[in-house]
Each structure stands twice: as C-alpha cells, then as structure tokens.
Image (cartoon, rainbow, N blue to C red; front, side, top):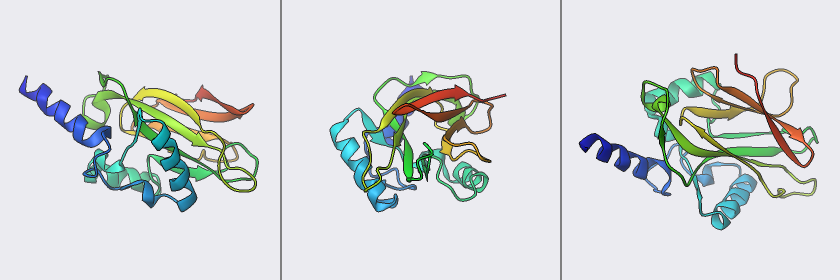
Length: 181
C-alpha cells in the first residue's frame, strides 16, 4: 500500500498536473518562441494534455539520453517532417489517463503512461496548422527526433528498446509505421 502511495505521488508531481516542480526541458518557454506560442495555445484549449518536462527521466538517465540524441531534447523536435520546406515541430505531452504496468524492469521503462505525440505543421506565412495528435501508451523513456538519412518524417521510439515508429506525411496528417527490429 505504501509503495502504491509513493507511485501515485510521483506521478502526480512529475507527470502532468502542470507542476512547476518538474523542469529541465524546463518549460514551454524554453522552446523556440513561435513553437512556445503555438504549444501554449494548444494546451490552453486542450486541458487533457500537459507539458512534460524531460527532468522526469532523472539527471543520470537524461544525461545519457542527451548524449545519444547529440544534445537534442527527448520530448521536442523541430524540422521539416512533411517535406514542404517549412519548419514543423513536435512534442511529446502527457495526457489524461491511467498509468498501466508495462513490461519494463526499471523506472523509465516499467510503466506505460498516457502520452501524445503532437505535430505542428508550419504554414508558409508563419504560424502553424491545427496540430496532428497521436495518443500513445508508452514508457516515459520515449523520445522523438528527425529520422536519419534522407527519410522524411518524425521518428518516435522508446530508449533502449526496438519499439521504434516513424510518422510520415499522409494527406493533411500523418500515418504511423512500425520500424522496430
């Protein structure tokens, strides 16, 4: 019972309830200004989604993740995902829902959290289209980044696993394709 209480308190403080305690990709304001404005607008009208700080991963794990991402941020990526030569951006957010026991053995992989990959496509004259939202249930060891090589889209995966996906442009949205081993 005590450990269940601790788990609930941890989730409450670090996942989403918008707490200013969880800071490292510290806040929305650390994103590019146009991205921060678009994300804040989305969050203000979509109360089931919350910004998720990368600090939830813990300092040692986050250091390793950032080295692997070559300084990138695990829950934020910017680039041309839909091949229109206009910068887009994406974030991983926490969303309202129940945390479920997953298959992992240690903290960042143990449980599956209600997350969302939210992709904002840039418009030619500034601003962003209505975002594409994909709800996922994955460990908080998830990340997004640009794919390697010439492939366009947005890569989504879970660190230290083969649970890898790619979002590719499809019509006015994206389709998700499993690319894990």
